[in-house]
Image (cartoon, rainbow, N blue to C red; front, top):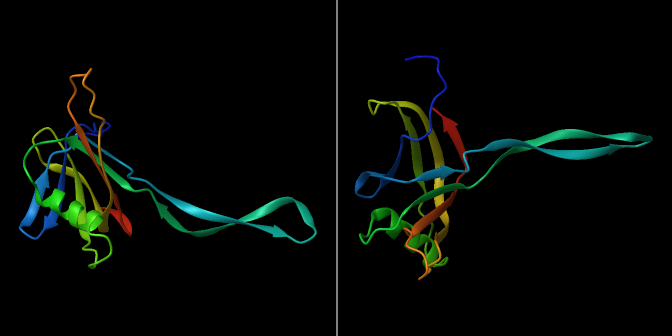
Length: 148
């Protein structure tokens, strides 16, 4: 393995759904971000600045995009039951694993998104004037992620 910067075009996602470990192909993964939240506190008598104190980590939603297919997947069923089911039943969380692969298909970097569940399911617009692939976008919230 070299010290060259890693390219981001060869990756894999894994979802441990009911039928065992479920892998699927996506064209894009975004939202892999964390930042420290801060709160400003004004000091009495000192008006030149405010103290900034940490409040905890904040995470963006994980956004996955793929071309729509006619097959029904365990992932689509999970999204449909969670988002479309309302709050009539408890939400099932999963750990989503994003793996960045080297040229031989070996994982060189992994991110684990813990207690993830779908919060948005969107399809690209249908336009009779364009001949484009329909893109399915899935958005997940999660508790935290780890680089493993």
